[in-house]
Amino acid sequence: MSAFDQVAQLISRQLKIDASKVALESRLLEDLHADSANVMMLIMDLEDACGVMMEDEALMQMRTVGDIVNYIEKNTNK
Image 1: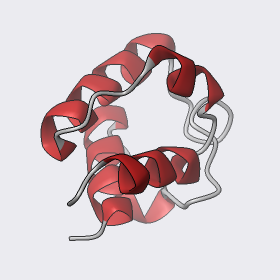
Image 2: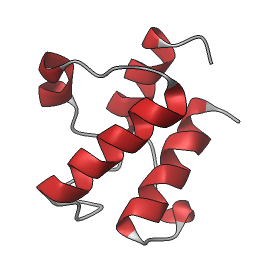
Image 3: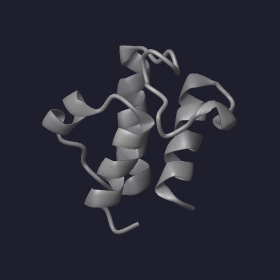
């Protein structure tokens, strides 16, 4: 499973939306309507699923699904 597929699946579960609505350019807050609680739960799920610890500084820079996928791809061997 690609990093994007894994992220899209986790986002769709957390936000209760169809995974087909998740794209690399989707913005978490504006497009997918995530709130801060959703984002925190998503981060914890991603860290568990991908075996990566997301740094606070990096989290502040993440706005899109693509930002998350890029971070995971750079920081894990999966």
